[in-house]
Amino acid sequence: MARLVAVAMPFGKYKGRAIADLPGHYLNWFARAGFPPGELGRLLALMHEIDHNGLKELLTPLRKAAPR
Image (tube, rainbow, N blue to C red):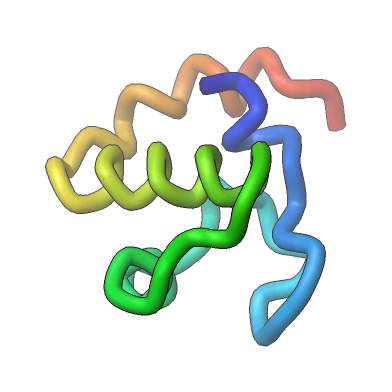
């Protein structure tokens, strides 16, 4: 889960934004259209589940521990 706050979106409208900071509607779009292959797709799918289930507060300790 620490990768959600460390990995930035590599393309698109939200390029450069941490996966953990992507808006729910964007994650929902990926869920409908299909997640990309590899680690990025796995991270997006995980973030979608976290967002969809209202569990974003689980990322707070990880944000505090992440290097700036």
